Length: 331
Ligand SMILES: NC(=O)c1ccc[n+]([C@@H]2O[C@H](COP(=O)([O-])OP(=O)(O)OC[C@H]3O[C@@H](n4cnc5c(N)ncnc54)[C@H](O)[C@@H]3O)[C@@H](O)[C@H]2O)c1
Image (cartoon, helix red, strand yellow):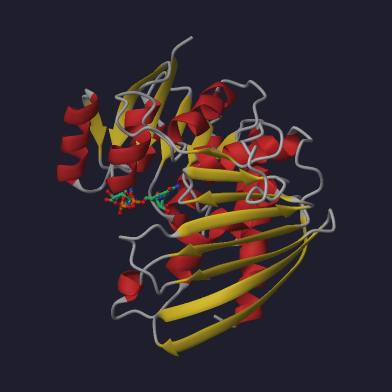
């Protein structure tokens, strides 16, 4: 059954990433909202939507909609998310689910009270390299995960004239506060150390102890160009490790023998390294970052089906970790 959706926020992320992938699913975008009239008009043309409003409350009262999607900002996610749930609408929102853990808890309570789902845009779980790594671990072929290392970097440009890392935490770090548990297990404790020699340019290392006994360390910061690949993850097991570069390149190292002294050496399906990266020349399946895949779980969940789509309960966990991290760093 086609799901009827009202959408709030026609910014860059919505119009370039989310809506183009959303309309590949069985949905009808019935109405759009943005306070910027030009963005609103452009999005209406791009997605063939004629019911346009600059007022989010009006969008929420659009007759016949089943659900609301939004990609706006932390405070609007809290306000519009609660208002939508109070109206009995299912909700999909981009991260962050409000600007604080308390706000995320309010959204969880509103979702429980309305008995309507609130799904979140934690698409790093669906980025293809991360997904494959997680699937390998879940298959049991990797054995126990003993360690997680990685980095998530961005550029200092966002902070010009405003050395407030709030945006970096809420819009970037929050992804990994969710992802680490998807890759390993729930987190038992978080510790962190930072270096900040120039205002706005911070590097910190976050240490995780996981409930499964694994340890982890993620470097995060604002000191790399976004013109370079800025994400990397490595899962360490016993005589196995999986490396994911830039969310799309994956290598699964296992336990091969030395090759040099063996003139009969070959590549062994059971022991040598398996690698994969996407074929970007194929004019299909072009969403390795995972928005389409995420929405494959989100759309049925909006209609009441149980799917693994990240929910506001996951959002509360991620936001609470984020606040622990900020306290540790005094940032
Ligand atoms: N998961 C991801 O990979 C990812 C990537 C980028 C952005 N995001 C998230 O998506 C959200 C939007 O980011 P963006 O980069 O598109 O920002 P943006 O500023 O380009 O878009 C936000 C839009 O919301 C509109 N808006 C602001 N207040 C409004 C209101 N009260 N009512 C209606 N519209 C309003 C703005 O006019 C703007 O067009 C953020 O929460 C961000 O964290 C997620």
